[in-house]
Length: 75
Image (cartoon, rainbow, N blue to C red; front, side, top):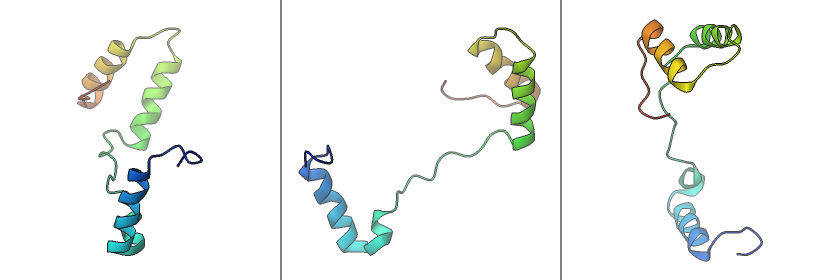
């Protein structure tokens, strides 16, 4: 389907899901990952970042791990 920029196989897959399960078949199965920092902690991290002129991703990862005990599997 050139208008949508997807293949006919893609359309067929979703069409089958709809005919098998109705609207529920069109819902995405992925629910996202568990939140590791609560809203207050995220705010504290943002405030900490705003006190710095420059920072690195490694520095941010270290800060979060040291203060909140949270490590991330990927960047």
